[in-house]
Length: 67
Image (tube, rainbow, N blue to C red; front, side, top):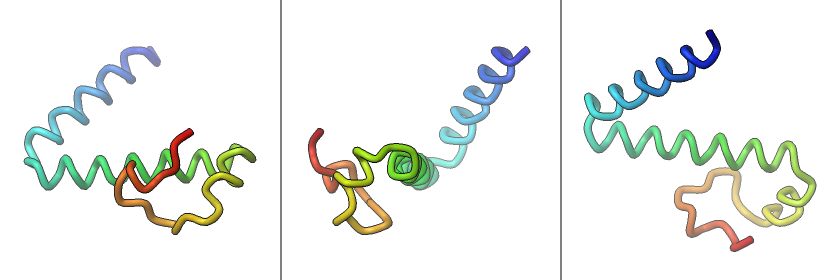
């Protein structure tokens, strides 16, 4: 059942992205990037040290240091 929910959730995300146009897609990409960075900073001492000098909000992947 969990696998089915994952597939339905992914399908819903794809539909929303297509229906909302490029602005919606960009907004969702920003949300996901921010969630990923927040998760890494919260759960990894390595990324906490690596990203400590960066601002709280990152707009582009190119703003992150290479790993």
